Length: 251
Image (cartoon, rainbow, N blue to C red):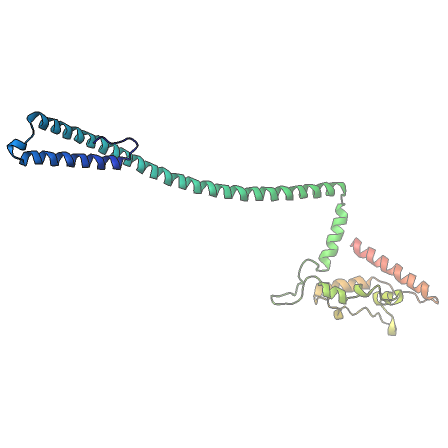
C-alpha cells in the first residue's frame, strides 16, 4: 500500500483514499464475519493502527495540497504582474524609440543651424543693406497682401510663376535692347509723358499705395534728350534709369 516516489499530490491523495477504502472494507468484513472467521485481537489492532497512519498521511498530504494551492495562486498573481510590467516595458521602449528619433532629428537640425550660423558669421551683411532690401520688399507688396485685399480675393501679394513667365522679365532675352529700353523708359508722344501701362500686366495689384509709389518713382525720371545717334539715345536712357533707381533706394 506504500505510494511510490515521484507522484503528484493528487495521485498521492487518491492512493491514500484507495488504501483507506480497502482497510475499511476489511474491518467491516471482520466485523460482520462469524466468530470462527474473525481476526484475532492483535490483527484487528494492527489494521486500526494502519488506518490511523493512513489518516495521518492523508492529513499531511492534504496540507501539502493547500500549500501548493496557495503557491499556485501566488504564481498566478506574479504572472499577471509580470505581464503588466512587460506591457509597461514595451510602452517605455516605444517611447524611448520615439524620443531617440526626435533627438536625432533635433541634433541634425541643430547641426544645420550651427552650420548656417557659422556661414552667416563668415558672410556678414550690413544693417543698411538689410534695411534697403526690406524696404524694396515691403514697398512692392511681395510678402503682404495689398491694402484693398478682402477674403475671397484671387489676387496674391506676389506674382506667381505663371504670371512671372507672362511678364516682361521672362521675354527680356528674346527682345532687342532698344525695345526693352523703350518699354522701360517713358515716351514723349504728343508732348506728354506716357508711362508703361502696368495695369495690363498679370502681376499688377490695384492698390492706391502701389500706384502712388509707382507714379512718384517715374515722376523723378527726366525726359531723355533727343540726339541724332540711336546708340547715344540708348546710353542716355540707361543713365537716367540708373539715377532714378539709386534715388529710390536712398529714400
